[in-house]
Length: 342
Figure: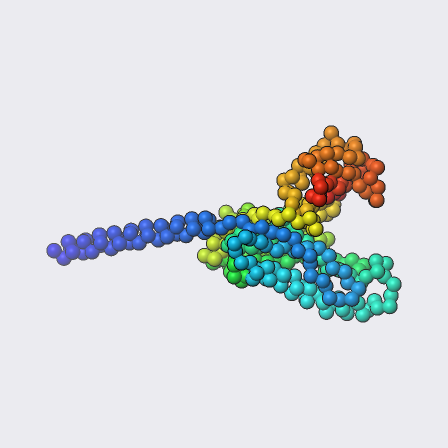
């Protein structure tokens, strides 16, 4: 009798446990589906970088702002602008000291330095769940010195405008950081000094959540680069918030923006670049670039490519062929593309 009762209780407990396991699995699956479904792309437009408020310092470039016909995004756009403003404030004391030091001197360029940010479309995601960007930033004293180039990383929850820090993405932070260090150490594109000391590169890590992975900005002796870590490697270590944001990352649409260029390929060590106005998709810019430097066009100084009229340009001249200039300016009405093969 007692044995039968024990067996009955065990059977009941097993059934309850099985039911709970099924319920938990169902909840997790439902959560993953919900996270994946309830995210739509936002539109991105380039905004002029706020003026750097130090005399004899120039300001240049752009930074992202987001748009949507239905969602209120004021808090998100304020957070994006605040990232740039905060970085400018951090640079301001050094710039003022340098400005005083060179006061009264004739400077070759006419100014003592500059502050610049740029929009790289390959490093921006924007959805109704999360906006994230890795923004190339330069804080320069002239003549240009090492360490001027860097990154501004920003990840913002939508629509609250709440910033997300890297540690918040991980439920198992130590393991996640070891994985990021291993990715940096293994990336042969990077400066050997960075690869030898990956923890130092991550000490003040700037990052962006992209649809295809976590992008981490790396500062090297000669410039900057980024490392893309796939989510399949990171997923076991993500927190619940991290899983939700990763599932919600989307490539944005770009609004017609004829006043600013943004990168489809930012300058590398050879200064090769591809940029376009916001109303030109990067796929179209890359198609035009392929045609301009194809056998059909590269010996000419003018070519119609992907619907754009492209002119070879270098040193103020338009009369030399593309295979000499390695540089082209293309237009289709007010839509423009600039390409430089380095």
